[in-house]
Image 1 (cartoon, rainbow, N blue to C red):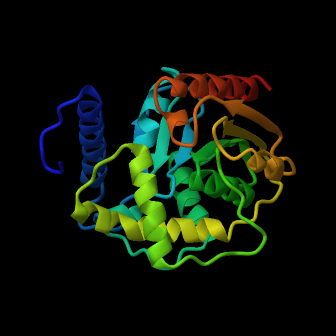
Image 2 (cartoon, rainbow, N blue to C red; image 1 turned 90 degrees about the vertical axis):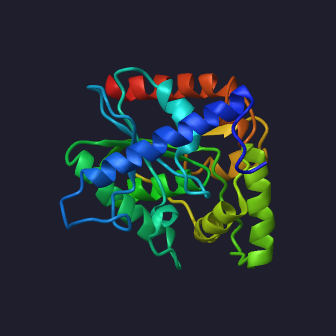
Length: 268
């Protein structure tokens, strides 16, 4: 029940993760110049694992906007690999409204280039985040590696689902994630989810000047692979379904595949 203390080990793990992420956001707000940025304009970047000497990896949030699903993955990508995630500012009071995917990518790219002003980037994202990461690679032109984690390519005819349909999708998404947010939190998060899904439905991929690696969950729609063949340099099927690929025990195999590709890029 919402508001009750966590009882199972998994519930305690999720509660600890949310606490850590909240602390990271508070640290980011505290580091803003006095009288400068407020919670509406703070950088979307959340440092999940900021230490290390290797080029950082930047991971874009999925439809729900939170970077919490990446916490386990970031911990497995290597002690010397900095990992940052991009969380949707709409979860923290920023105006949502209509958001073309290209505009979202431009905003996130500017934040990423504040952390890494020079040199080729390493970007990626799960679900909607994979589409945003690919657009970031197209816009920047200096991206060595782009990870697309089980991202769908919409049909050629754009759809425009209404709020009722999106509400059903949102409920299914929350349930599949194993989360149990209260009604107030659900109401706060739904506009973010709806805006990101609508942005994805207008997404049309293109070839980019980057090595694009699609990591496709074995439990996802098989036809998704065929639609990506024209845009991905490499496709690998990994364990789990769209949601469990980022959860234990499957996340270990996903992290291994990503570590291998990052190592290959670094020696070229």
